Image (tube, rainbow, N blue to C red; front, top):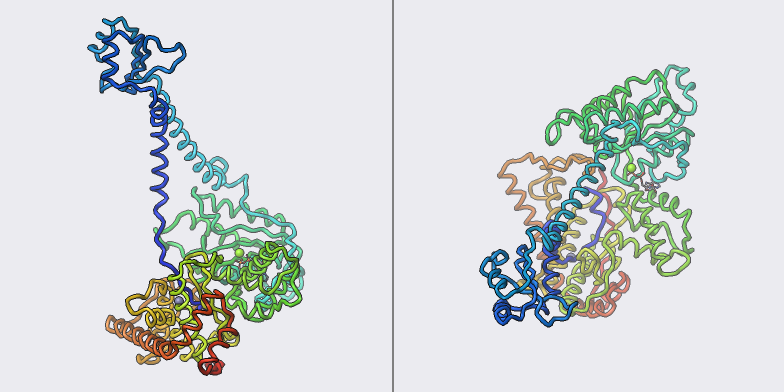
Length: 639
Ligand code: ADP
Ligand code: ZN
Ligand code: MG
């Protein structure tokens, strides 16, 4: 089960219509750009126009002084006798080809009109050409810029990766182990690396070979980079870093030469740490991969392996690499003498989150009443980076609210902002708002009445960015979360709660009036039910794992679920999933049906206040019906 399960929020979303393509938009822009000059010219002259017929009449009447024909635009500028000297000439739209119409010219001549015919490609046509040329130039320039950027990204086509080294060196990282919290085991393992760097003699004296490479494995934001910096900081050695994705460049050979440069510099500065972020970008299994083998990547990888093998007995360089996809790494990288140590950096548990919060609260002004314990409880599944970001968002909110210390309210709001989206102004549309209120009350009431579900924290119908029209939030039990074990009862109640929104809509407004707002609920239900059947043996199909769990999702093995069953089994699984969902739905509708007056009361109140805390909600519920004690979902005993 993934950590995502912890984020227990039922959302109601509007269906989103995909925005029309950017391409179309820019195409229209281009078109109008080209078309603009003539159109403007047209508009300016509108008032001074003369019809062709009138023009001929005036010619015949001998009232025309001068005619200036522009065959490119198909118009003639006409000056009448008696027109003021500085008056705008009148414009006559000629019929096609009339510019060189000998008949017209003869007629003009015979009336002694001063005629001038502009040569082709003059006047407005020049403006046209100028516009188009400009456009082409802009495009070419843009293209050049793009080309230049990628070329310089590759270290410049001329000086292959030499001059502008794309690795960074920090003489002092300034990061200490104290700054890294919540990943104690990883820290302990890496403490050893610090000792290697500080006094290698101690180890070499007894004949120990100092490890060359350490691989940090874990999901994004758990502090891998921070940890590597802390090692350098603690040992007081320089820190060289480069990202694997920067190796994968346009020109073959650049990546390899960059590796060479990096290690050359590192050797000059030993002892030191070389940190390679996202090593999976270069270190994938060779000869495989989508789009066939990648020469460039292979060369880079080979160079990296060569460099690592080339370390003398104790060169004082320790290579630390980070990845969240250890499963795709080339096995050559994991051989002894290369990255032979693997340290897992996992998402923090409750304790870890608390410690990380303490680290990041150090430089923030927190209100006395803020409880970091409460925040840690509210944030299961958050990574270290997300926790740091949370406190920062809270500080921003505090500053915007012109307060001088961060309160619990600011933190709560920041949590919702991060997990659900920016809050928007409440809806005015009363029908839609009512529907949303019933939907959310459906979730919230089931959360309250089902004994295996978690405690209701709040329910709101204030919309959020991303099409969220309202949400119901429950507070998960921390023991259960940290153990990562869920009971069948808990899962089933969770599914029932998730269907509560749809069930309420159907109960109140009828089966045909249900909205698409329950889309994400249903997706969640299907996922949960499917996991119950195929992973946890919680269905009539019995205790068989029908899909390989394949480790954590972040390791990427679950990308393409391997099905190890027949077609017949597949349809049985579908049946079971449907049975679970239908059963939960029937149950949800029945509970809601039995509590109709209560629901109406709750909806009225919710429409009025828009956000209801769990306590107030429970207080209203208790006026109508008995609220069962929550069964503290005990983790399944055997591990
Ligand atoms: P990763 O490299 O694993 O993706 P980072 O080390 O880049 O994660 O983490 C980004 C930021 O998040 C850090 O600079 C730090 O502020 C914060 N952070 C992440 N994990 C921790 C942690 N365990 N303790 C303290 N801060 C952390
Ligand atoms: Zn919902
Ligand atoms: Mg990182």
